Length: 200
Image (spheres, rainbow, N blue to C red):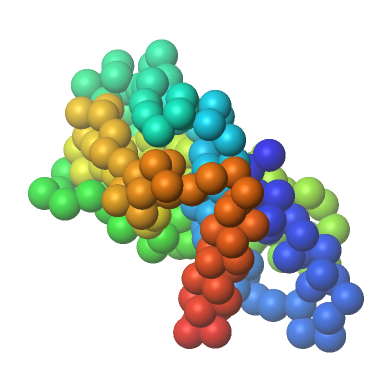
């Protein structure tokens, strides 16, 4: 499941004296979401990652295809934004010549989510993965529908025309990463996560 790596981080944090802030949880959740998509797609030669309200990324061998969700094209043609309506979270979605930066978008909406969640669940004992996956996918949906699209680092860019361009890092991983090297790939992603965490 997406955000499994984030759940493991939260499980460890519950035993630390400094559990973290809403901003830190937001950044870690955003990174985990992207990392888990990438790891899911590189785990085997046949893989599918379903992104509710966005579509599915399907891997067959070295090929990766994106199938938009049934309502995405219609929503995009009507500039239908759903994140604020369903979750009350905000991002200044607008048509722009370059895609939204995925990490900034996802960590910002997750920060808003955790700011609320920490008021009721100080130790974050509930499992928030379903809510976060919904929020992240609606953020991608809204970036597409606003006419900007969104670039997820090391995964690819969801374009405003409901297309998808694979990131070079993921493309190379699909072509050259044997299944036995998955643990090495996961280790590299963990290093990326630790670098981001230490810089914040």
